[in-house]
Image (cartoon, rainbow, N blue to C red; front, side, top):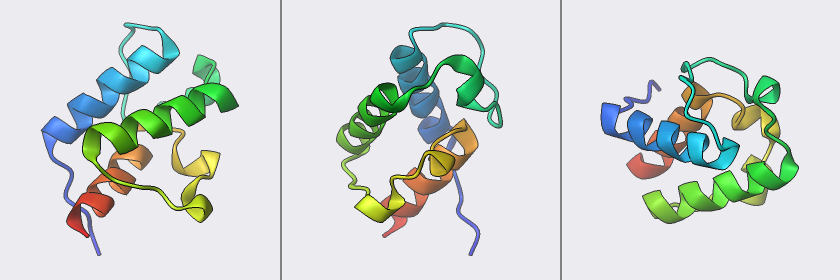
Length: 84
C-alpha cells in the first residue's frame, strides 16, 4: 500500500531534523543522516519530537536507525501512523 505524504509533513520533519542536527543546511529527502552526525542520543530526541509534534507513538520494534535515517523514510513512517 502506497502512503501519500503531504508537503506539510515533509516540511515539519525537515525543520525538526535541522533542529536536532543543529544545522540550517539543505537536507534532501534521501540524504543519509549518518553523514550528518546523527548519533543515538540525537535519534532518540528526534523520535520524541516526532511523536510529540504529530501526536503519534512508535512501538519499540519500529525504533531501528534504518527506519529513521532519511527524511523520506521518516515521512513514510509518520504518514503511515497518521493514517491509522
